[in-house]
Structure formats: structure tokens, C-alpha cells
Image (cartoon, rainbow, N blue to C red; front, side, top):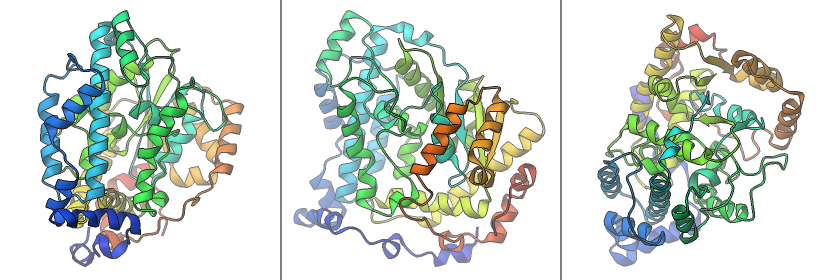
Length: 450
């Protein structure tokens, strides 16, 4: 991390031009006083009003706490954190929609558990969890694993608008009152056309699409950084939005929120238990880069999990993590604190990656890791996946290999543009990155790219 480079970083407004429609909507705040106050008057983030609206949308009545008696306090702290940020009009609209949708999902989950306490007995057996720094191949590894019909990765439609199977006459009545609550769940359509849901799938995909693909509408360059689609598997940070204490909210800019990583993992497990209830059992497939910093909680929550750790030269991954985080915040806010992001991301990932390397070397972590190197994945993705499966003791089929080849042929690298960057553009120097992550690079034999 170079202090000189940090001082010289260009602000986001100098890097990206907002589309005209975004600029015009944001300018509408000028009619109500301008600036942050104008945006606040245009789009309300009143915590009480949003909670009441979510409850009314589900027919009102009583809602349990879904195993967390403190969630309302954290929800209010989260809203207060957003109110303290200088969100623009579009940013406030995006945030309001996400909060309302997350509230509805949480309330529906609470009612499902109130109706059927046996959901707590659902076993989550040996999930496969992908983690590693951004740009190290986490997303493509996740998607190639997801092509295995024996694995179930939650799609955006699952996470944002889940189908919760009716568990009693009472919950059947609740399902009738709420949108898309009854019926049979599947993981949504895969690239080969299998695993289709009922007639409601199109509606759930459409509701998810308006949210997932909107990010690239707000700033088209986002598509080259990360593809969001309603029918693709999503990260744990998306699945756990209704905990109101997880990484999604911190990533999009609620810096002063009340984090609770223990409860966030507990929420994720309860959500997965609810989704799989009454369904043929599949192995869960999950992913988020941040798991590398909380690896002990991963194994505390899922003791028999397999962790697929992806690796790449830090000179490529660390700047990309900063640029991605900055872009996500820029979608909602005209002021992005780049120096703070650089320092926080450098500190967190340097500690997490080095610590896991050292603890794995000392045998202090469960021997339930398999490693996927980015350069190996580029050279021979099928062979790389086969090796990963061998490490987990799972069968890698010829059908899965064919699906991988087909999927990659239809999704070439750079399909939505190339995300170009240098370390110096995002506050780093090559030398300092190599030095700060030397234990990680040495332990895993990371192939350097320049």
C-alpha cells in the first residue's frame, strides 16, 4: 500500500461518467432543496415506515424474530447509518428497495419458523464454500461447480424472492396472502435448461432481474467487473441481506452499521434450512470472498464444510477488490472515501490470506480445503475442476465436464468488456503488495503475472 499512490488517486467522478438518465434523476433532488437533503426529501428511508409497509404487504399480524431477538435494533442502526451517508436520489431508491425486500423476506422466514419449529432440525451436510480474493477466480469457480446437478447454489431468485414451502395449514394461509410463497422450489434454470421451477419462476426471475441488472444500468462499466443475473447463483452476502448485520450493507456504504458476524452466519444457516425443507437433498454450494477473514466461523457453523480456496497474484486481486468496492458505493453516492477503502481492504485481506496460509501450514485448520489457482483454471478448467473434486472425494462426471465446456464457450472471458486497472491507480504498489502478502504467495506457490 503506497501512501503516495493513495494521495494521488483520482476521485470516482473523474473515472466514470454517469449515464444521462441517472444524472437527471439525481438532479431532481434540486427541486426539493438540492444536495443530500433534496435526495432525502425525494426518497424516504424512515425505518418505522418501511417496517410497517413490509408488514402490511404480508397481511399484517404477528411476526416472530427468526431466532434473533435483536434484529430490529440492528435494522434501525443500519437505516441510521445509511441516513448519515450522502446518498443521491438513485442511491436512496436502490437502498429503499433493497431494505423493503429484505424486510419482507425476513418476516416471511420468521412466519415459516413460527409455523414449523422442526425447520431447525434440517441438516446442512458438507456444504462446499468458495472463497478467495476478488479477481482470483471465485465467481467462475462458483459457476462451474454450480453446473453439477448434485450441488445447489442459491440463485438470485432464491435469495431475493424465495419460495418457502407451506409447512402447516396456517402457513398455507400465509402463503396465499404473500406473493410467491407456496409451491415447489428449485434452484432455477441452469445453462443446460434443467431444473425449471413452476409457472411462478418467470415472475421471480423478473422481480430479481430488475434489481440484479439495475446495477449495470446505473453504471454500465459495472458489467465488466461483475455479472449480476437473476438466474445465476449469488454470494452469501446477498443471501444474508435480511440479517441486517452482514457484509452486503457494509460493502454498499453503511459503514457505521452494527455488524454481528456470528448472527450473520446463524441467519445464513437458518435460511438454507428453510429453503431445503421438503426438497430432495442436495449439497449446498456457497461463495463469498469475505469468508477467508472469518474462516473459524465458517467451520463453527458448518463443521463438515469443504472450502474451495482460489488463488491469484495479489498484484491483480487487491486493486480489483478496491475498485469493485468503490464502484458499488459509487452507484449510490457521489462521495466515495477511496483512501479508507484501500487501507481497510489491504489490512483485512492481508491478514486473512496470510493467516489462513500460516494456520493451514501448521495444521490448525480442518483439512477440508482444496485449492484452485487462477492460472491453472485458465489453462485447463476441466482438469482443474476434476482435481478439486478429487480433493473433496467427489465424483467428477463426463457430463459435468461437457457442461463446463459448453458454459465457457457461451461465456468467453471479457464478454462484457475488460476490467483494466493498475495497482497504482487504486493506491498500491507492486512491491508493497508482494511484500505484505509474501507468506501467502510463498505457501501456496502463487504464479506471479508480471
